[in-house]
Amino acid sequence: MKHRQLRKEQNQLQEHYNKYGRKRKAFEVEKYSWEQELSMARKEILEQDDRLTLLSQQLAGTKEALEVKTSELASQRIAFEEEKLAQETVGAKVQDSEAELLRHKLKEQVLKNVELESSLLRAELGLQQRGEAARALETRLQRLETELQQARLASSRAVKQFEKRTMEANKKLSDMTAELSKAQEHARRFQELLTAERRKQKSLQHALEQEMGKTKGGQGAAGLSVAAQRAYVDTLTETLSPQSKNHGPTRLEDVIRKNEVVMIENRGLRAEVRRLHMENSHLLHRVRFSDSNAHYMRNQVVSNVADRAELLQRLEKAETQYKELESSLTRQAAEWVNKRKSEKNGREDHKMGTGGANSSARCQ
Image (tube, rainbow, N blue to C red; front, top):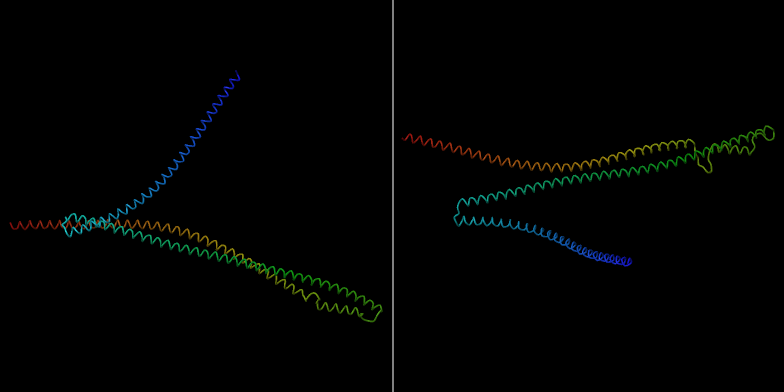
């Protein structure tokens, strides 16, 4: 019984699992269909957006064409009305009030057109002036750039020249150092020769003393032997004329003098190197000053452009206010003149009425 019950529960679980699998497959199929529908809907939305963009562009073009057509029709209408007015004034009778009204409208339209053209001319003139100012500022900026490039080129040339002079000074210093070492070597050799000569003199003196001792002992004739005389003469000759087979004539005073000259030239070269260092620092300072000056000039140009734009705006505003004030003054003057004329006419009418009444009274 237990085994059957377990088998039954296992079958039920298998059925539930199969049912869950079928539902899951159905859900996946439905999910895939939903995704397809969503992608199609997105695609349709994008297509509709493209259509709306195209329609808006076409509508803008149609609107512009309609405005152009409307302006053309308005101009044709005005021309037709003018022609009709001309024909009616020539061939037919038109009421004076309507003709005067039409003339007034035409005059207003002409005045509007003239004012529009004058405003366009002023705008073109302002644009031309701004363009000229911008070109002038551009030319000034280019000139500053050229000056900056020239300053940089001059500084680079000065630096190269300084480096060249430094290399030449170092080379000359090394040559003089080599000459100094050579002179020191000659002095050392001269000192060695002097020491050798002193040793020779000491040996010669010792030999002479021995010869003198032999002579005093009565072992030979009076005077030096031939070998001693020859050694004495050779040593004396070498001492008086210090010339060697391997070395040229060298004197200690010449070596000292040459050493002093080399030291003086060395001090001069060191002073030249210091001067070149100072000149290089001065040129670098000038280059930095030129860069800062160019940066300041660029900022000044930008601020001048902004100030010019602001001044042009203020000038346009002042011109507008001046025109409004001028028109107001003209209108007030016309009103005042009309008022004075009306007052004068009223006084004249009053005088004429008073004079007629007096004359009638006199006639009675």
